[in-house]
Length: 434
Ligand SMILES: [Zn+2]
Image (cartoon, rainbow, N blue to C red; front, side):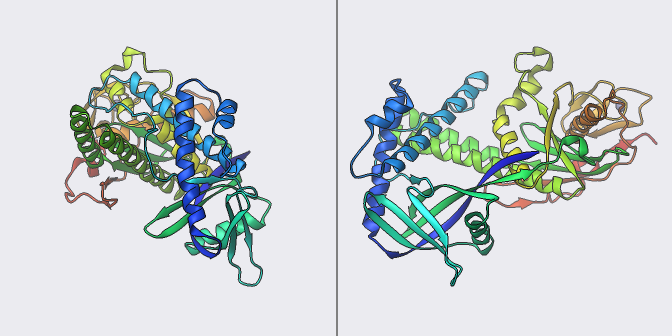
């Protein structure tokens, strides 16, 4: 099944001809167009009307369309974040701030390939040459530099039919101009029912638990728990500062920190989603499985636990990030109904209960007395997928001996570390009867 995925390649500009000031001016004009677009959108104008209103002589019409498009995208993601925020009952979560329209300064110059900018590969030097049109009748040319892998990928995209070069954004930082180029590729993602390994993903307010099960034997191939509790604390800190600024009416600082917090959350989601895909791809023919949370918000039967874990992370964004990264590696994803996965014993299928990090089974006949609670939930999700793919009812049977749960912590500094205590229950896994 062909699926498209887009990724961004980061490069630096080495300018050979043209004026840097043209690039500078275009970035400042972009900011004005961005501000005007958001203003007009807030006042109910549609895309076509906005395009007409923000038109200007010193800016390429095609670039203008691209900047307006990007501004409207920002507006849309603010709207969905706001929707998410309205649905939650967590008073600690900061209300998303609308994209600001009173910022001065620069904004990335967004350009469509072959219109606002063009890339070619030089046959002799193998360099990627660029030609940017920051203003009508003005051209800046030179070549791009970046990490060798990334540059290879970019050369492939320019020269092959299988990849497309899309929009690019021109940015500036500390004396250097950067060009972030998007490339789109089509992938052959296998159907979920061809999978040999089922990877259940359970997400809650502290961590993401992943368990890989062999579809044939349903033996556990591995469990990984990604703890992001510390990152959350840092997020909380941002929120505290934000609230304080709000009380003093310093809206501009508030906005800046709001952006920072949003970037921070996105950074966390990127780190976590990358780890999910890297975990899955070490197994043969994996499928990554999520709980479908979309329909359960109002169903009180799931209680506060599920409600809480829905709200601590923008779950849909996380799922989207994982799916996108998985597509790029040609790994399928799927969803199963969210149905008591955290309260059901993965061995006997009966209801148990969660006690901190442990899941306790109340069934005396069951082999398993307790397991790591997050593993238990992720195993159940994998079981549901097997039942869905093989068309039978889930016949729960966790094997008596389970491999250890690997626990890694994500911290705000970007380090992923192993816990110091080797005695934590997290690492002991299943404790079985005699
Ligand atoms: Zn049980």
